[in-house]
Image 1 (tube, helix red, strand yellow):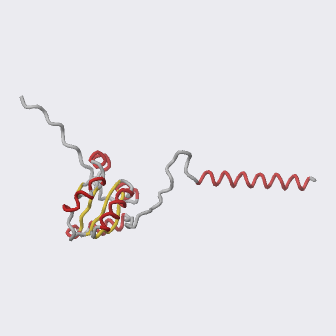
Image 2 (cartoon, rainbow, N blue to C red):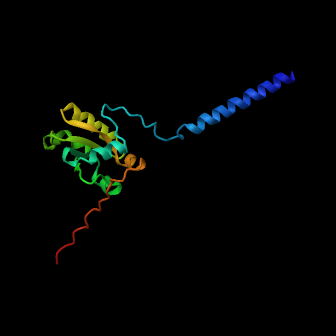
Image 3 (cartoon, rainbow, N blue to C red):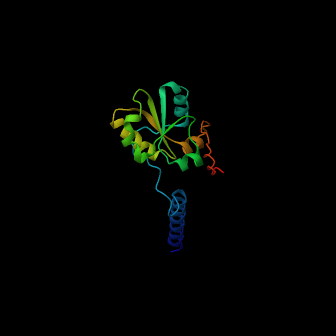
Length: 154
């Protein structure tokens, strides 16, 4: 009887520790789901982005974020800013003779736009997240300051 009780205690201890270990490796309650990539467009690493930025004459960076995100988070040194919701209406203004990197904070909106551009015949190298790029050690992000408010003429 004593051996059965010890076995039950060990099984209970083992299952409790396994449940605790599993809980500690999953996202906290209310946290967003895992960062699953669901786009056909490749998600670029900082190394791949740096290699593309090294040939600016062949590249077009399209940042699809809002202006307030650009000033808060920064972007690559030279970019065309077209918000994600406006890209389809602005296709005529995007050159087809360049390789394109699409950019957003964590690449998800950039992935959406990359998929759209690819379907329209553009050459898309991939999608980048400016925050992900910096977290991977990338150093090309530049911060821009919004212009000072205009003052009334006296």
